[in-house]
Image (cartoon, rainbow, N blue to C red):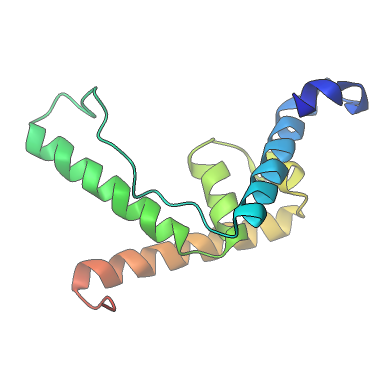
Length: 133
């Protein structure tokens, strides 16, 4: 609704996707500030559709891997989390992420690099059994 109401402020139709995502990001940030909490992915339920046509045990393992990855992603700093999400889940280019989040292209690259590095380290720590309890 906010995008529709402010549609006249959009000057270039080619940037509509980034513009709408920017509005969504700002609304999410506002919501999280009001709730004073971070989003949790603990409530992910297994899909009614199998992830693959493989054995059910393999699907269960993939589902657990997804839950772990999302949980570890939640532990990253907010900017790294946003940049990683837009890159990995939305398939956005660095330029689109830059426009959507109001960051320079170099800042996007930096957050993406640091976020991936931290996520790899967290997963390595988890799988080697060195995680803090």
